[in-house]
Image 1: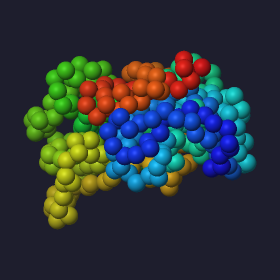
Image 2 (image 1 turned 180 degrees about the vertical axis):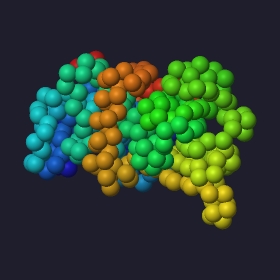
Image 3 (image 1 turned 90 degrees about the vertical axis):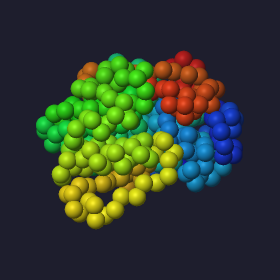
Length: 329
């Protein structure tokens, strides 16, 4: 990725720490290289991944512009890109190199989904690339959900949890159950395709499952493994609780015919951009058809710190997006 001397507005991480370290600054405008596309950003999604960058959990060079997903319009295309045009509305994953909390971002053309003629708001489109793409990849590519299987999803009212229940339905799952951390989130989660929603500390009473998706970690991870039926698959894709890692004895998996897999969207996108892009376009099409509902709340880019505080508090439901273009034009 090349950059010009022209300055743009961006939220940066000048040092690792609490949400207060985020700073609005002027940085060089990036330019699209071969196989890439530059996007004028209208909205950027706010995610727990960016919280991890800010805390220093992920080793990134400082100052760093976070932001793993955006919606906007194509600003320029790099050499070899023939399927996207300047001015075209798009949703995009910017997770490989980040940079979405800015007026302009550059990403691989493979990680872009056109929005032409879909009638989709840019705020909604910005909420799809990370969570909705993840939902389809986790359940279809990693867990390999089969028709009629039982699926359990933790943090069912959150950004990715709200998409996993709906994606499971589209993939033919039979029983789809979600867990939440408090009673106040039960009704919200029920609106995202779940047959039942239970409190996380009561999951032992929920029965057996063929697939469990855990982004919480800690005691929830151990409970998730216990809920697996023979030949069940646990997909680990986060540690939102911040708890110490949970060891899973290999001999236990051998004796019980269970499988544990991991999924990281950034690493997957870097290794398999074509597969990731296809999943992104599948998610956009599902949302446009009304088969995937996204609950979105918008905050100004300048309030990125507040978005991070809400995400860290566990008070959010659905998805927060940042209005970069002051009205999302």
